[in-house]
Amino acid sequence: MHVHDHDEFDPENPLNKPDVPEEVQEAIRTLLRWAGDDPEREGLIDTPKRVGRAWLEYCEGYQEDPAIHLSRVFEEVGGYDEIVLLKDIPFQSHCEHHMAPITGKAHVAYLPDKKVVGISKLARVLHGFARRLQIQERLTAEVAQCIWDHLEPQGVAVVIEAQHGCMTGRGVKTHGVEMTTSRMLGCFLEDHRSRKEVMALMGFG
Image: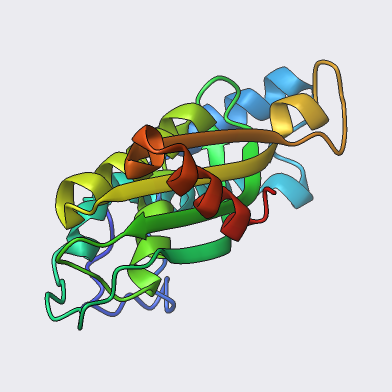
C-alpha cells in the first residue's frame, strides 16, 4: 500500500494524510451501495478516503513488532521482588469475524526475575497487538507470551475485560455485557497463592 513520503509537501494534501488507493476506495463504495446508500451523495463523497485512512490506524499494529517495546530493560532491580501491575489500560481493537470494535480495558502484571521495563511499555505491547484484527482470547495470550519471552520473569498475568460490537450492534444486540479472558504463566499459573494475590491486586477478589 502506497503511503505519502512525509518529507515531501503535496499542495493537494497539506496535512500529508496517507494516500488511499482507488481500489480500496472503490471497495468501500461497493459496500456502501450494497448496504443501500449512494456513495455519490454529498455526505459520502469523501467517506471512502476517510474509511481507508481510519483502517490504516486501526491496523497499524501490523507495521510493528510489539516486542520492540521490551527491548530496553533495566537489570538493576535493587532486590525488588514484588508484582509489577498496570491496571485499567484502555484499548480498542476490531474482531476478525465482523471487523466490529472491541473496546475494553486490560490489566497486565509480571513478577520480575532480573529484568524490568518502563511501566508504559506494557501498555505499548498491548496496543501493538490490539491494533490488528483480533479475537480477545488470542490478544490476551499474545500480550502474556510476549512479556514472558522477553522479560523472562517469574510469572505473567494478563486479564482483559471488553465489550464486542458484534454483540452490541448486531445479532443478539445485547448491551452492557463484558467478556473476560485471562492468561497466567509461570508462578501465577503454578502457584495458587501467587495467582490469588495478583487477581486481588487487579480487583478480582
